Image 1 (spheres, rainbow, N blue to C red):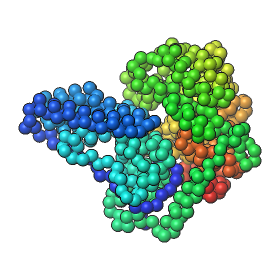
Image 2: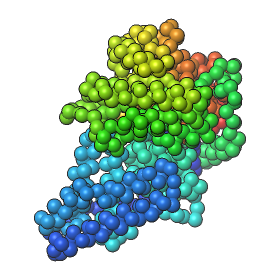
Image 3: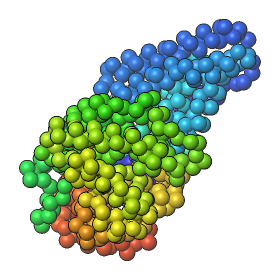
Image 4: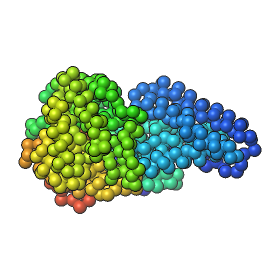
Length: 564
Ligand code: PEP
Ligand code: MG
């Protein structure tokens, strides 16, 4: 047996043969080309167009997120800035293959430096580079194979365009050497319900040197085992059977909401960022929306959305949850989500810079327009709309935001707690807010001074880290003292076992990924509030994330019997 440890990117388990994705071509030589620059330019144009057309055709055969990813990738292949950069290199005597490679490197480096969401775009650019290089070299691009048996897919990294071809019945699990829990691979795997482990160091080399041809994946804890023992095989086989049975018997959302076995109601909301997500959230049995990330609607805009445009999309997003709760967040721009229509000065460290609520100091009109649009859309939709601001650092910011939003007629106003100062000042913040929502993704990175996108630092961003659990407990305690509800909308709420612990820590609602909502609901409805409190107390005694999980699970036996 050879067990490697990665980071869990979705739940589930798998056992079976594996396939290692071939890597694309190496970097082309910089030796000057024998062709004229005109010929090389034509070759580049032809290859780029072929890739753009192919990806667009593939997008027409799919829908939803996969379609959007393929269309975005197709646009990169025709991006004029990328192609002009390559043409400039061709004019210096280089081959089209070398030129596109170099140009893509420049673009990828800029995107990687920006961090966050843009790191994902860097991998999109790298994938387009590989595809164009393959066409120029008359070599087939290494796509995910269609084998005659199911297999575990192992890769250094998977591009968004690669993953749109994944077939859940064929691919038992995905394990990648790179990527993080918020990478595209992770998102697609969760959407398709495929178990996935990312940031698994050494997995490609281990797969290549393995002689057994078999691998076991327990995505719940991120363990990947080559040549598994008979005992582990039996364990994984039992686990996959349990998961299959449980998923085949999904409970429907009770009309009065989800309750623990001892009768405590726990609202379970969904995180959404696109119009399509809203219907998916209804179908998944969400009690409402717990985080509407408005910036995701406008990331590609050059100009600010007008009042009418905003009002229209918000109304469409609120209406399916008429009579239920929708928590909408004002624009969380900056750092990993820069927006062209917000004027950012160059910042050496954007994650610690002008982002989230801080941007409105210089763009106040933007916030006023957004609050007006939200207020108008609320009255037109019949939903119970709550509004919150991201990246609040001080109680006085919370107080100012609450007063401003209320001046637009918005009744329930709160803030996100995702900065350590807001945890330490939670008493004052919960006193002036109607509710708070804990953003564990940012709170985890700021508490541990560890970039949330870094695969290398993924362990600090493990949402089971005791410091994060203590912080959540502190905020929940303050909220309860000031009659201020405390939800969690970061990724922590999407882990079924951790979701139970959060409730045990005193959190009153959860907002999770649509794809994991049913698993979270099954966890919450199969346990008592008492068990959750015991699990939370045990986790608080741990000194590291692994122990916190182990100690907590010791009180949550029912979850193992459900394969959660
Ligand atoms: C968070 O930080 O946990 C959060 C929900 O906000 P985002 O992931 O959009 O930064
Ligand atoms: Mg955040």
